[in-house]
Image (cartoon, rainbow, N blue to C red; front, top):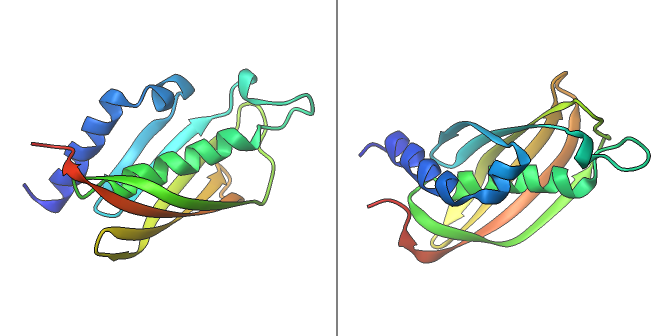
Length: 140
């Protein structure tokens, strides 16, 4: 299996069990070794009383791109830490795009940077995730 095929197979295996991503309407747009793009459209149940998307939903979108990127090598990995900076508010109907890229990978650990933008390309959030491989394979 090529690295690209392994990344796609890993994403498929994860998606089948990822009820949270499915329930939020996340869409896995692209997965490659060490990278992933995930989108989400802000729904009515995701906005607060001010009409802005709750930060937790934006974090979840970024975390999904992080998870699909760090698990793209077929090894089971989990987050060992993450930080997010919210830059701009999102509103009902906005299509958010989270693009994650591997910054460093060494041994069982990795660092991934994810930028969440709106459809106009404006930054909504910057997320940095740290991963740790826990053993086991996502694909046989």
